[in-house]
Length: 157
Ligand code: FES
Image 1 (cartoon, helix red, strand yellow):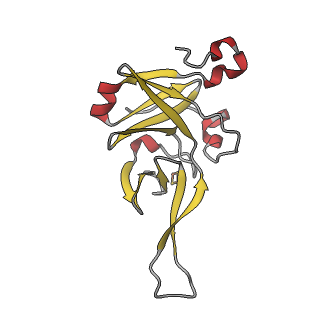
Image 2 (cartoon, protein in one colour; image 1 turned 180 degrees about the vertical axis):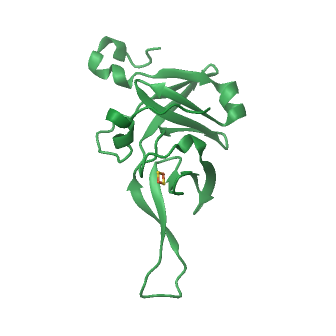
Image 3 (tube, rainbow, N blue to C red; image 1 turned 135 degrees about the vertical axis):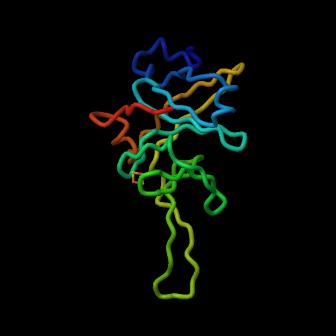
């Protein structure tokens, strides 16, 4: 499906939307994996919203499709099954807890490392789900595992 006319422009083809599955299926499984233009992504359906991101964790390439979703600081995150890094579903930010060493009584507080996991766009059309890869030009840490020798793990889903 060519939602944006990019089939006419080979340079933009990588950013054309790709059909990944049926809405009724992801609503049951709450997650699915797909290869979109040679990039493996995971799509989550969580509390009525869709989120897509690179499947391999920005830290060391852990399989995010096998992680649990939990809220931290009121933000739904995927928790990487390998070393428990927390990544916000909506923005791909890495979250961590910090304390002020000069104030030992202070409670740890949740902070953001910034966007670490590349987030992609999910669209739903007539019960079909499509993913469009992010073309934001910033260098995202998860790109390392989404390209080159490390790309594409076989998912067990
Ligand atoms: Fe994901 Fe280390 S690989 S936390």
